[in-house]
Length: 91
Image 1 (cartoon, one colour):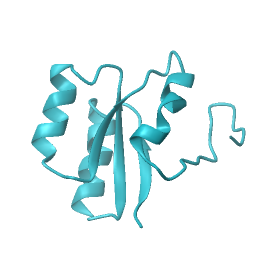
Image 2: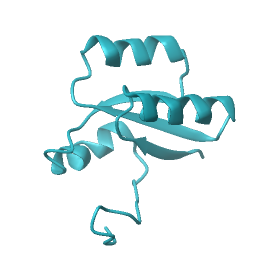
Image 3: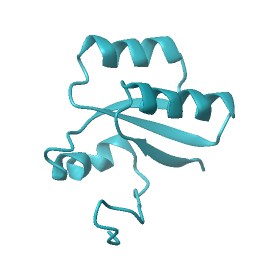
């Protein structure tokens, strides 16, 4: 079963580069591409241009961190885990 990786800033240069590299490496991940607005032109471009079933464009906003995890079960039925936060705390 593939694991999921959450990519913050997926429509920006760095987040987009992370996604490109994961796809190029054929990494066994479901890529959860986070954007503030899933209907924005840049989010739709990301979804369409990548043409990969591995990418799920999901809504989240770092100004409201709870929004990142509010609908995680809708994004991915497998639990998401992280060992890093800005304060280096375990979730």
